[in-house]
Length: 129
Image (cartoon, rainbow, N blue to C red; front, side, top):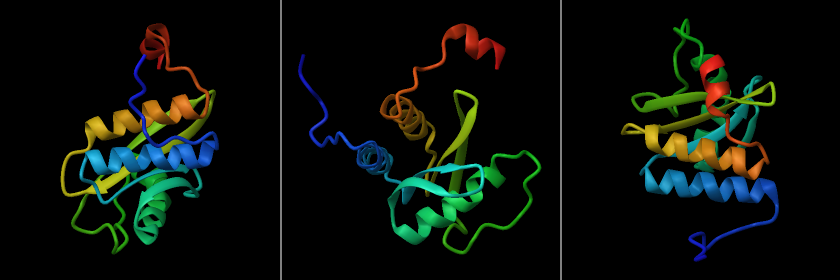
C-alpha cells in the first residue's frame, strides 16, 4: 500500500496539528482548530491569535441562539463550527476563511477521530444522534 501522508508524527498533538495544517492548506483557510467546551484551544493551524480567538468562540457559535459579536481577528470572515462527540465528550472543530469549508471540516473531523483513537460513528449511531 502506498502511503499518501509525507509528514507524520507519533505524538498525537503534533499529528493533530499536521492534519489541521493539511486541511487548512487544502481549503485555503486562515485557520482550523480543535477546541473544548470552555473555549480552550486543543490544537490549531494558522496564525496563533486567530486560532485562539476561533477556539474561544467555537463552543458559543455552535449554539443556534448565538447572537454575539466575533472577535476582531474573525470579523468579516466565514466561520464554520462543527460539534464532534467523542465517547460522550464534545469537541469543536472550527475554521475561518473567505470560503465555504464543509469538505475541509469533514476531513479534519475524520483526522481528529483517527488520531485520537476514536472510531467513526456507525450508521446506527448516526441515526440515533
